[in-house]
Amino acid sequence: MTDSSVTSAAPSPSTLRKAIAASAIGNATEWYDYGVYAATTTYLTQAFFPGHLGTIGTMLGFAVSFLLRPLGGFVWGPIGDRLGRKHVLALTILLISLATALIGVLPTHATIGVWAPILLIVLRVVQGFSTGGEYGGAATFMAEYAPAEKRGKYGSFLEFGTMAGFASGTALVLVMNLGLSEAQMMDWGWRIPFLIALPLGLAGLYLRSQLDDPPLFTDVEQKVADPGGVTGQLRQTLVHYWKPILIMFGMVVALNVANYTLLAYQPEYLKSTIGLSENQASVVVLIGQVAMMLMIPFFGAWSDRTGRKPMWRLSLIGLFVFALPMYWLMGQNLAGAIVGFVVLGLLYIPQLATISATFPAMFPTHVRYAGFAISYNLSTAAFGGTAPLVNDAVVEHTGWSLFPAVYMMGACVIGGIALNFLRETAGVSIAGTTTPGARPDEEDVDTVSPVEA
Image 1 (tube, one colour):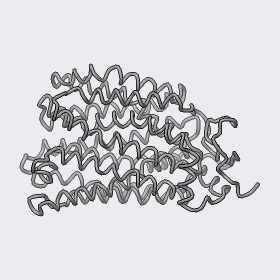
Image 2 (cartoon, one colour):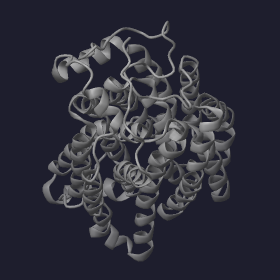
Image 3 (cartoon, one colour):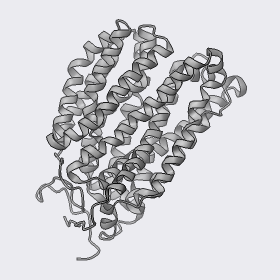
């Protein structure tokens, strides 16, 4: 395998700060949408699914956006590897924020009948397709700007943006619930949080327009031959890098079943199992989100010293052991719900905090965006975005309130198996066209033809 050495100077502190902000705000915008959608489930159900589907219809609206994420990954990823990270990320954040804002102006089922839920689903599809290129690109952008020895620390701020966006969406809906009457929320109040996504997206678009592509990408871009355009780029990624794609797929099963169960499904779970009100359920989740958010930079920096694999192993084992007792505790009362959610949230953080340091380092530079986006979004579509729907359906039809814990435990087993095949890359450079952390005899294939000897 021919490596392409990178000679570009390290980015200045100000450039690095801008790269962190530009990456994190896109992720925050994406997750702001999920936070608002989860926190307004009751209002969305009455506005768009007033018939027999009920909450299942709303959860379907949540899950359907994930069906288009893999397609987004297949499209945006190879484009990002061939044409650059910056332009793709500018377009994805604009589409995400616009689709989210348009939900806030949709007419309801009472006004236009079945077209209301259809339009909601269409906007969720647009959001999902755009997200298919957003997250992998933002993580890649961040990782390629960060110094190798601090990739965990700086990369964790992308996930800080995740929790900040989700918590902001939850908090805003909670404040509006407290300040407006139920009738006002149902009539027009639920729309406002969705509309706020547009200025968030425009702010992210501005930040991203101020930066160039990472030097790691531009150096390699000039030194490798064109594999045959975007389709050739996709073919190269799938044929030659299927092993890391499969490893990441298994790890993301664990990551996102826990993520979407705890962050997206939990409010509905608490309302249906122990009878919490909309506001009480939001408070429980918000407390957990803030606690998680504050710990993310700590665990990210810690992974630079201890490695990514020990952090993941700690999280997977912890969630497997504590999922059942914590879900039992959450089924007792409000205090138990807070304690149980915070414990599981903190056990989940070692995975979340190290995504941006772990996953981009599984691929060489010339296929990093596509490899990340394809694997992450396929797994998320199959197991992550469907988690609220699966959990809600099983709990509602069987009455087995501990099912989410068992589902999470099964996902942790899959993640643990995949983790055994992961190369440790803490402190390892991700520059060039060789797989980071691989010895010459371990390198999968010679997939890059240098332009010059």
